[in-house]
Length: 469
Ligand SMILES: [Cu+2]
Image (cartoon, rainbow, N blue to C red):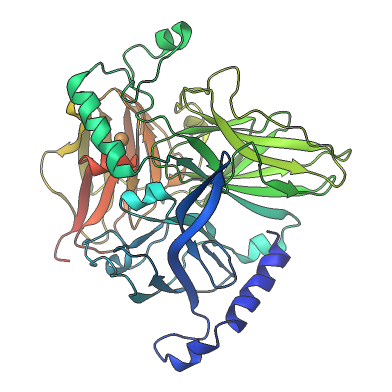
């Protein structure tokens, strides 16, 4: 959707909600968002999945410059649910993790979420439960005045991993496979790997789960989304890894892209053709479309696997060739090589930490047990500069996400840096990553967890609490 289209969509959405005026609790600018089900087609099969839809069909929320986050969320599912606003910094009671502190919404229940949107950026929303696997996830884009002033087209790509197997069954299989086999090679679902890859990954667990499909905006490469772009134009592609348990490498093929933001926060621009994107993370890429035009795939390569998904950028009249959903080579393992090059455009003010915390990332495929260990509870005080050192003592990579805050990446394996501002950072196997943030959003327990849904469900979650909150 282009900027112009989506402005129109917002107006249409307001016009289609006349009943809002009869509900005094909701201001006229309140966006109605319904958690419901919808049907998509995956590899020729109909699939019933979740969605977060506005009355006009817009998936998720796109905020105009200066607008508050003001959403009336309705639960049209026949089950309880709750939605987390990933990347936003709401007051703690509105964060959307079940019972931290809000109770899940009952079927038919509606709740209003109204808070300051914060800085512009690419964020998203998702259920903080196994419902995330069923695509209960959508974009949440905060547009700024600068976005409007730039002469660029704007598009969002939400990546996901899809299975026809219900998540409860997936997790039961993971537990059974880990407990019985315990091979520690990421073969839990019966994957086999080629010799070279196996050598490269010796001792490492890459993927827990083999999915039936990998989606970009709900579609596979059998029938990918075609994003119409202008010859010689500039595109801002906002890519969200909404997959529950799959890391991707974004591959722009023949085009060089410029990384301009990660996790909704600007970085000093760097040119890339491949960018690692772990679960929960976002990247904004500027892509200049060649003057001669053409069709340009932007692919997401599954980490350590042949599968891929993506969208096609195409100028008017361009011939679009079909791209196979499986590549001949495997997607790279996600590393911190690019992370080391990233620098926040607006870093934290230089300051020594007032409070130093340290967390160990523990677990293995045996019995599928994952956990975070620390010397004591993770307690901070309002106003403190807090550092957290995350040491991964396991053989899997863990994308670690802190709710309600943005942190700066300050060290990788002991090498001090002043990296990107993020809300989710990858901690590879046997690696250490240091982050720092200012404790300015009080809460009695902000979720701090691995963004692999199954690791989180198996216990890889802690809470950062403010003293006296
Ligand atoms: Cu994990």
